[in-house]
Image 1 (cartoon, rainbow, N blue to C red):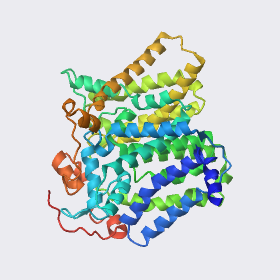
Image 2: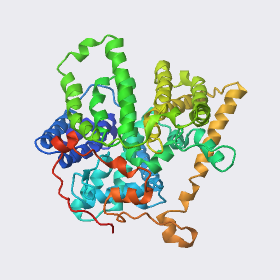
Image 3: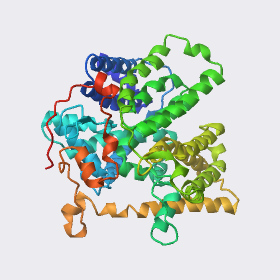
Image 4: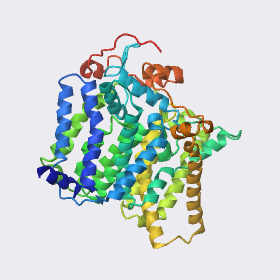
Length: 513
């Protein structure tokens, strides 16, 4: 009887999910890698203190709240689960369909974490790794327990993450299934121009220029960073603008750093701005000066400190600098305009024509997102400019949600704009979506199902996991002297190595297989 009451408390009925359960599942999903990382990467007593602290904050999530709940019907949960399974299949996770080039490194990380002791240590150079391993830790942990690395575990783990993220977004886009499908295909014009000029002799645009990528690209190149970011972006909008419970988001955001550090920086900046407006701008000082601020803000901040110390051990060898320092001023300006400037104008124009219809976010907040996007785009970090490619994810996701909500209102009320310019801009955005779709049509044949049923129709071949004994050796071999391998290294003699790290077990030099 008590169990039934407990289930009903979180689901409203034994068979229907609502946002209280969705939040609990989301936090648990993000938390599991943090617990594994805390225990595997830090020496005692820090490891056990971190695990206990995380479990305490997770336990607080079981305390009932009076905030309003949004319910999911059975058929909605089934649709979201199927959508996540199909999308994961075509993203390449698990190797059941064609994988983008980044899966060389993804698969190597899974194998490294499965085969070698934790914390990750490269004995051939005597250095600890420094990387956000969150996405990989649970499948690798299961592999250690079972004695084999299972692609199906990777696939299901990824699908569960997409299910949770899509569930949050689904609520925010008015539960429109067509909008959920459109969500992944909306993209920028800059990358299309880059591909066009790359195939001509007119202009050679460098690969590191700031550009907006669509969610389909993030899901098929960096699912490790998209999943946690999608979950938290949806949670943040729901908590702040729907449920008015801003204090409940500090803990979840800290959990994402081990999943994706660059998007987590963006989420932290957004959250800090929202907190500043709520507590200082609206003069809600008394809410901060209460005992609940200790578990809401102070404890999550303390728990994330060792992980931040770990990231600060990075050797800093990656390419970095202001975006205009890598090209002559005129060229840098041209690359910026073609890569990002046109998209800023395009999406600002679209949203300006629609934002009064979205009824979720204040117009001032939407404008602030554009300002933040510009500020983040002025700096380059990494060979491909991973800094901007990844920090943009939460911002662009929010803008897409606003766009889809507003567009849905326009369709519902059949209130099309009268301006031909506006209709033309809408048509351009749809055309970009169609181009994006066309570049992924090959996934319909390059997958394990077609390989099994009609092998002559495809050249699909999954990428191996065990080609290299660790990820450092893969990066050195595949990317040569580009500097990618060095990005994974921590500094010798860093604070993490001297005071926080476990003593490495695998000190014997690995040999390439």
